[in-house]
Amino acid sequence: LESIGEGAFRGAWHLTGVAIPDSVTNVGAWAFCECHGLQSVRFPKDLAEIADGLFCRTSFEWQKGLSRVSIPQGVRRIGKYAFSGCVGLEVVEIPDSVEEIDDYAFFGCKNLVRPKLAPSVKLGKHVFGV
Image (cartoon, rainbow, N blue to C red; front, side, top):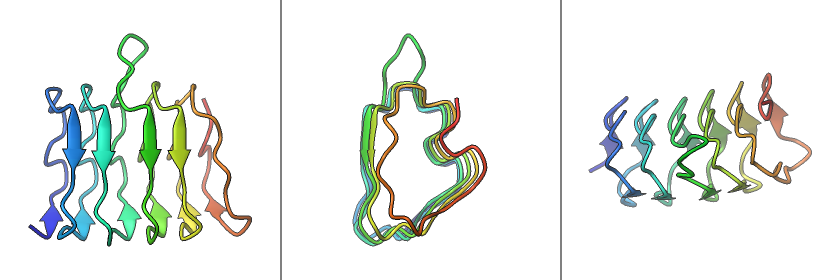
């Protein structure tokens, strides 16, 4: 398995954890969006970007869902809406390899403690807004 297609698991509310194999180098946009039961994710080691909307809306007020994410070293871009609306997200670890965080990537993550970022990271619009 080298790729996971766009929207492949979108809305799969029964998923509680995702361990993406290291053979995967591309995960399509919105692949795990609206997976409301998602509580954990393990990224492959050679992933270059977190695609647009990849984990958007995986939690709500009444369902904590995904609360902690560690972006792997080597990721250079976090796409638009990647984690937007993840109300339960509290901690995200972003490595120095990240060069760009696109518009609304963490928008609506009202419990998120703003992560430390390298000064050179290019930020899009409303990246951390609520």
